[in-house]
Picture (cartoon, rainbow, N blue to C red):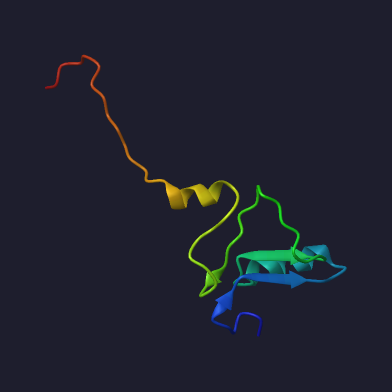
Length: 82
């Protein structure tokens, strides 16, 4: 039921069974899953949604991917090409 939506920004799970809550968090199609809390943010942890709840990630090192392009650069430092 929780995944039956076109949005997936965040989710919160409240449980005394932490192991079960973590397993549930992995099954939810949401960009953030809080366990026994809600709206706790840390700038080191990526934040963003799945599905129609966003176009990428903010915060954390994953957010940098939106502003960079990967490029391979090869330099010949004197070896003769054969």
